[in-house]
Image (cartoon, rainbow, N blue to C red; front, side):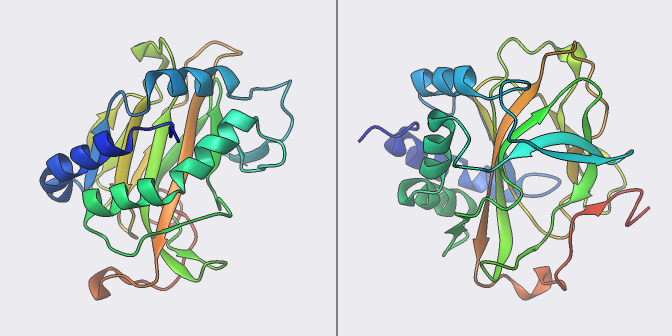
Length: 239
């Protein structure tokens, strides 16, 4: 079977990138370009649903903190997108993540809680935040985010860079452009702050497209444990 990714290539990348991943600032992360097989990335970009043709979006709109669309409805999303989501939750991909991050026993999320296809249009944004840390359905700790961008010919002046912030949410440390077939993988804790807070400046009808997958474990290091919480926004839940 040909996966949308090359398992052997990814495993080699994991072993090469693991030391830099562990030592990255402001928290463990890595950025990989040309992540999927080129033909698979092209198919996903073409299949990615947009309004008004696709109506299965959940709308997230909290003034000043988030404005985006998301869909994890596998009964309605295009078949190519559903296949990709399933393969990101497959054994070969989870083993790649374990090798890259050094976190054993990772669990994919078949429910795609908060994940799936994400779409952000003109004026949309996602405030700097730390993600929810506990999956009540899996009864598991959230450990890893995987974001795959599917934006061809994305001009820098449209914005939409993923920002990684210091663990006290005091300053931006890194900005990552959401360009085509780029994956960003990072640890998630209660202090791994990130977002794309500046409103998008793309034209009407253009969208920032991404797939989002989250991974969990039955336990986590004691120093990372916090009481279960929802998304924590800078400026709302903390200064």
